[in-house]
Amino acid sequence: MSSDPTQISARIAAPVEFRAGDGPLLTIPEGHCKVIVEGDSAVLTWTEADQPMSAAIPKIEFDRFIASGAIILGTS
Image (cartoon, rainbow, N blue to C red; front, side):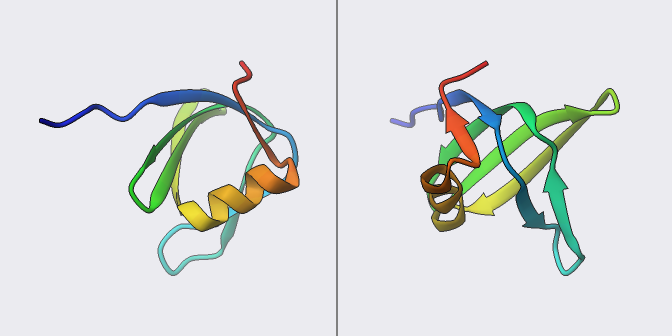
């Protein structure tokens, strides 16, 4: 039996950076996003310039962003 991951509404309140592959650090803009936490990673999705964007970050980094207040869960 498998369960679908839960999508959580969140808000980026301070700089949240991630690295896409071996590329440079990119910043998720402040504002509304959705989060799915599954296993050892969190996937954040948002819209930027009317384009859907997403980033997968390690769960340990996601937890650090929550602890610092950069990501606030349960907001729309």
